[in-house]
Length: 461
Image (cartoon, rainbow, N blue to C red; front, side, top):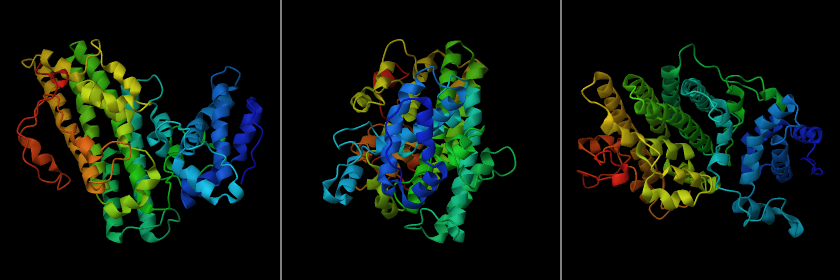
């Protein structure tokens, strides 16, 4: 337990306060107990530290070393700051506090934004990928492939330790051995397919101090110890978190390449654009493979920890929305949903006449030119593969959320996703409708012969 300290905005005082929260103990306790049961005073101090360090990070008074440490720990602290405002957590603390002592957290009415990013510690992932910096699409993609290989290996190792009885964390509601074995095999296959060297080794022990994370050029320490913090002790919540991490990683790589492809197409550089889109297609293939792994989570096990995720939902995924926007433009039907999420509201700025998505460029590509034809082919392949992924996402909602349960992001769950998953670059769902039912993920429905996208989304107009 950590005693609350007097708030200070000086560099030395802040670093001392951060050091009082032992990095290795925090990781071990979060994994052993689940974040919901972490020491309340420690979490309150971490939330206060986040508020105190932000003004310092905006100043030019920090030494280079201190700035590096504070930048590294800031997203971890922000996650605690956001999650500690959850009504469920506040109410749980108030019930367990004798004599009506005031909770150290914010009141249930003091909301601090949606929780999807904080639930998965996705800002740490973004740091590792370098997607929070001005860099090239090639640099981001290299980091993406390295991260996919590591996360798949780390998740497989977790399942293998569980299978052998040596994993001490998140062992409540452990799935059957056959599920663990099959899942591990599929993850190892993904890791082998994306790797270009020997099998990835998994980091075994968390650093003792926050500063010890700094010499981490490939991000493996941060990926292993600062991203997967389940709220509960349920085994399958770790699988759910790793699905989120791998999916977001793929989406960042897809987004980087699609953005570059759009700019190359504007410049009539058909061959280079085709190469970018082909690389994006490789990542969508991996993304779909990850969802295949997620199928092994049973509905009962998912519902056991679902309430602890709060209002976290993939509907809040900025990366997912950006991929669709750069491919199809802003869907007018999503305007209300985007506006209701403060973190995503800025995406509505793309709904202007100066923004050109992929769908608007396709008609201008000369199909008679071999390079132009290749670019069109790769664009339509990306459209098909992203359609498969959206269909799988819709299938996830139908599989895990009964009709009477709303989506975690405040939407209508599967009904919300059903309204958008079939939108395509061409505005047409053809004969591949049956092929994307993904082995029962989507229940049989009357066949959709043709779906007209709104004119703003259709490259036929």
